[in-house]
Image 1 (tube, rainbow, N blue to C red):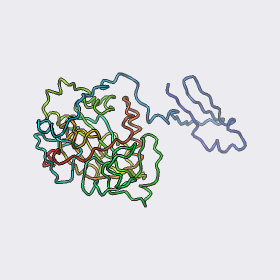
Image 2 (cartoon, helix red, strand yellow):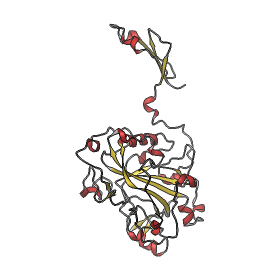
Image 3 (spheres, rainbow, N blue to C red):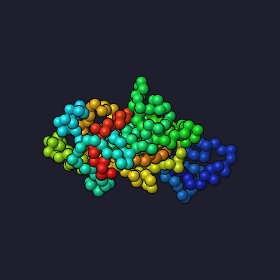
Image 4 (cartoon, one colour):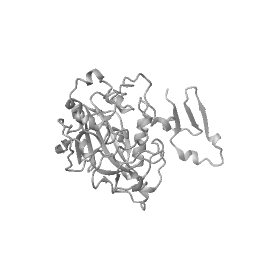
Length: 355
């Protein structure tokens, strides 16, 4: 039986009794199942039923069970970019320049998915984010952007901190929405005023439509129903058509008028949000790669919102609460990851011409 709190609807009756102690008004008992009964000396025919576990419902996950995606990651070690390119094994890297009109120098023979992933049978299998933007969109998130850290600190790793990417141009230290502290309950180490690039990895081999759909690390979700024996039989185009990432860049504000409740589900498509998209093929990102060491998890489709948007801190905190409520433990994605340095032109795919 679920825990319930039963209280009379008529508050006026309670407050009208002057001089009586609370104990005299309300008797509280608890049965062995955890049910809390509140009884008034003036019962009302109408009662409110409240879940006594409301404080933890937001992060309560489903019943424990075997996770079929656990450990499904296929290990593909990083490689020397130049050597892989010479051997014809480099299919483009991320994050790249997504400024409108940009075309990389690396000749590739694959095309990105140029329509919503769900139309191609892909589902989101994870959500995580990076400190600053890994992609570059001139005029939106670039070298001129600012945040709570300074420009001097923005693109290098500080002692004990992750490398920060590009910043949006919204931040104003004189406006409360960018500086007023927010009481984070679920996300870890987040900052109001900071820019974050959110990634939603998608896969046609995920546990789509099941309780095990979302996974950390995201590789477990991407490869949940795919093994190495099958992977090696796929062409680069088949891979790029089966695995993709949505990316959207936000500046966090302490302003509830920018609240979106379902950030975990994927890119926000609403008005300007999600309306100007760059499509290209690249790779996984992160600070273990740069312009010398490249990722072998490639080619995969990227769909990147070229615009920066403001979103409330509570939107992120709600997303983190949703992550805590998944069957798989997503605690390693409740904080920002470091940003890879911008991919050099020579390692960026030339299929930017499809934008």
